[in-house]
Length: 308
Image (cartoon, rainbow, N blue to C red; front, top):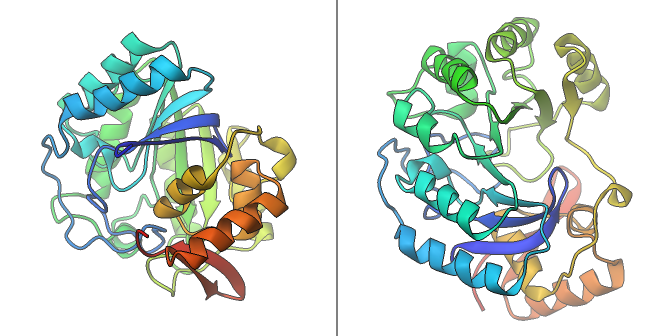
């Protein structure tokens, strides 16, 4: 399958089928923390990057065979709202299955009424907002020149006004860039305007696009969480026991690593797999030359490098 991956247990969504509808690193931003790497050239043009009919055909084939899912999730190689057919794909999923649909997006295109309309049929949307101050936004997200913090926040507010589903706002915090007192105060004010159902606080855990991007301490994350109030939670770490178990083979592991570097503990938790099986699958991928073990700030991560 080219455009869907999994299903794999997700730390936030249970057993999730991924839908990846834009080519690798097609994005409006080039975030310093991105686990997929730097964006070669940031873009904002919406078009049918991959034929909508091809994506729906893969989904149709999947749902004729398997239906045991918690979510269908748009995520993966880039910004999914760049695909002009995302609304038709969501509608097609709704015709094929009763499984709820989630769109993970950086939220930068929600100022466009057409994008907001496309996402109205989703059951949940996970937009990002890493800064509410222009200087920090430029440093952490390295956006397309047409994008500003004010424009993005206005788009998120408009979407909240029009959308009846769940909005889970993710904020990625990077030490020394967007974690100052002024930054957090501005983000708190913005979150109050956006009115998400939940605020999810994250920090740099996996190897980032830029090695200078560093994580906040657990204590600092907790201090910031308190400033956002009862609707905020920290998602930077998770426990294996909280995850559902799924059928995981070499294909699922390959799909996981193609989209993010992973430590052994990451994969044990996210994939719901036992350590012996994971070791065997990793050895197979390493022997085929598909993955390599790298060190990041004293921790080791497996990274996908090429097809066998």
